Image (cartoon, rainbow over all chains, first blue to last red; front, side, top):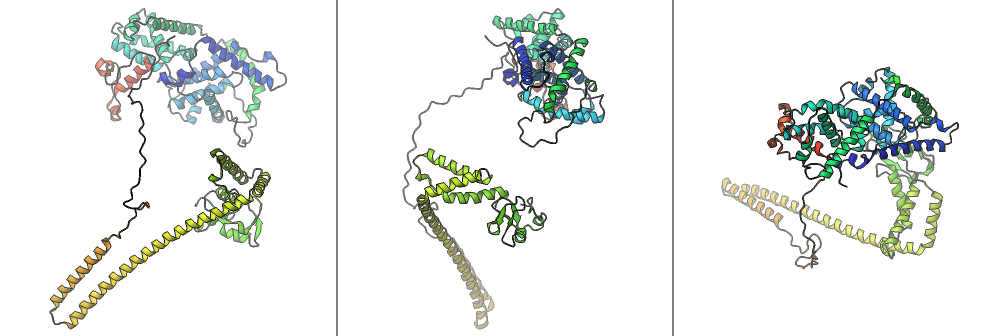
Length: 319
Length: 311
């Protein structure tokens, strides 16, 4: 359950500032690493700034969402939610410049299918990469398998992700059973669902427990439909005397709504400027890690025959 | 053992399960036949590592992994030199340090690390503790002799018992044969009618049988339990010290869920939750599923972590 999960212990942070700080640290770490390795022709302007990284991150996050939605057979919502959460957590501690988002994104989807017990064989998964030839799909799969261990490591092996979808169902059931004041809770479902999908594209999952996100979704849609649900909190959840908790909960919900409002779709022209820079960075700095399997850094085995040129596949190959 | 083959002739091991593998000081194995063939002149080089070897150094392999055998040999040799016992040391720490030293030496020699230095160390130790080594060797041989005497005694006891049993059987067989012979003789010579003779014979045979049974059942009186304690000897048991401790009080497990209390699984239908959950199909109930399970899980998830942290 969520209350004794690794998500609550290690992946819920206190404020948006803390999250932003971690991302800045990851960016800085990459810059230091490159500068220490002393590669020639390194200028500070080559690196991506934080806001530029953010734009790219959101762009690839969108593509991950579209990929999951277009997946055949249909991916359950929790799998999509888990994949998005993995993507977000990975780029909390790593920079976009270090590991290219397009492979990480597919690896997140692949891992999430496994963890959430949505059984898809790797060939079936590869079959969903529609614009590739079968040989290209093989290559992509190989890359996914290489990155898988790295992804798991960077998630600190905390693979279970609690999504807000089931809490939302639970709250709706509870409303129907104990809160007859609200006549038709089902009417709230659609807009609460949209709220949750939007929330998955923000940092809400890293800041609030999933049950609070679900409650915010329901209260928000009730507000939209001009239905009052004040008494639910005080009566049913037993918070009549606990004014402090109630105010804190409203506060969290306001923060969540702000997060959702702040989210903006990545603009195409910005993306088109930053992407080639990202490609250039990868082409220049990522070649050193091509030879070994990602994630097997401490392996003392004899390396397999060094991969020659890593076949570069572009973004268009994905969708 | 079948999965291991002789590295040289490979197939022969599978075809001939009785064939033995021999290990040498370098840790590589060879089957008996190959040893004969390669070392016909008494010395040669190992097939896999090319170290010069002698035929006499080959020993029958006792373990599946030849490196284990190699280590066992090395250990025997090392322990011949490093033969101190636990009462030779004044503290446990010293004894453990000594043992660690020995293990390091065995490890180095087995994995061919730093062989030169290790051998020098061994020689130095040997020179320094020559007398102690001799003395310990003497005590060791004495102990071994005592053990061997005990073993011999036991074996003799077993033999004796076996012979006794055999003799008993022989006697019984002879008694039966004599009985039969007596019957035939009587049938020949005596005047009594055959039926009476047969009846008499039967009685005698029955008596013999009961005698044999009784003999088997007589237990030889001993005065020793199998653990060696004399019977009727009072063994003093040390009084178990009474431990006074705080009495244990059971406290039920309390898990903090950071949210409102969740109704129990059994209460769900009474309160009315189950009306709002999809009912279980007959196929589902076969596996033990009830709609209350799904409902309970959804409610638990909804309430877990709902309240903000205090402070």
